[in-house]
Amino acid sequence: MAPAPTLLTLTHAAAARAKELLARRHGEVLGLRISLDTKGCAGLAYAVEYVTERSPHDEVVEDKGVTVFIDPKATMFILGCEIDYVEDKLQSGFVFNNPNEKSR
Image (tube, rainbow, N blue to C red; front, side, top):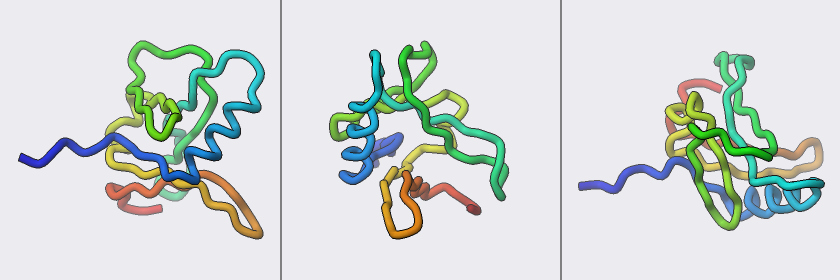
């Protein structure tokens, strides 16, 4: 029997950037929340925000020292996703590498 897929993972670059952003926040921050927003070409986009209070229905993933809360409505869309952080000359940001994605 194959093991259940991991809900999500962070690359080392994404974990380092998340830790940096969380350390800059004032007040108590528990981690980052991933949810879905309705926009973009495919109709859905990932949203990342700071978490100061846990929602009782959030899925919680801890990877490389970062706590990520996942909105229950996003769980089925994020299963198996790898979050990376990419920085180049023109832009920087978190990149969601999702094996279930049909279009971008």
